[in-house]
Length: 453
Image (tube, rainbow, N blue to C red; front, top):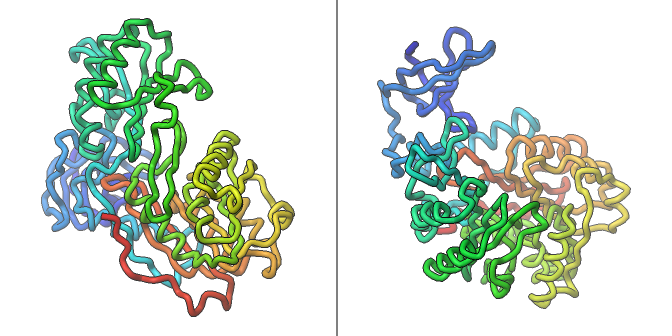
């Protein structure tokens, strides 16, 4: 059944939001300000889901999607919206979350951080499936609706040299002895080379190994293999064990990593984000700094080039070990130290036991940092950092934690803004600054635009 809807806003899945007959309707493919004719595909007690059939009144911000698979492939959600408008939508999502969930408002809205809108995705998990009726093996992202693998031969958000591998990978997997036992290939693009991690549920034979080696040589990639769990990941060639790394030229750092380690998808934005975070923290040479949820030391090691001491805390011992090794390799072992701890269960007593930090950076996963926020709020003002910088990949949990820090801890939310880490998707990355009352008043974060083009 088709109906006409007037679209008011976008949700986090880039669906248009309308109200009709007393219910909220999420309309796929529609933009704010548009009037569309849409088919109601799903009805729920409190909302409906519809799909646009015809745009009756288009938005001035609507553009023709650049990718011919848009709408079928589930990798992107906003290609029909101009990049600038995408960022504006994400800024509104952040501000709405802070206001509605955290009941807080930033003293200053930071200028959004922009980067490349195409070819930016340096990490990806490609699904693999043998589909005889489609002529063989499919390699790509899953379809927008359902668990099928999209039949695609290019991807515009992947770097060109990786996109160009989609068809050769289909041919390679089809030639292996176990094409039905390979569910995925993970892509990791570093500054010194690209790695492909092959997940295989059955052993590879000698001929398979020869095919992988020939492919690696022809396409200048490194193969890593994962026959079972994460502990079994290893490079096909021993010489490739240290071949994957990203560089942080501003700080003179080389960050080695494995294909399964968490690193930011967007390399250029990551470099700019590190610079902005350190600028907002205003670290001084005599400062003692904490980096919570530190991972491989993405922020810790740059901080160690500026501060007297940096303590990185992470929940994975494997990442702690690699971060410690990176500190040694970059000559920073005397200024950066790391420890493993479950940061979802910490309290004020634990935080107090670490000693006072002048500054703190928090970069949690989507679950946020509720326990850390409550621990900070419970400390006496003299015991806690005078400035916090919180990097978030989930506006809802950032807003929750901001409410704790402000309403229970007495911090001020001095500034917040979005980081367009994932163009054409609904993913909202953001950064926020918290100050103790009466501190940081004369050092307001700069509103100057930060662009990583």
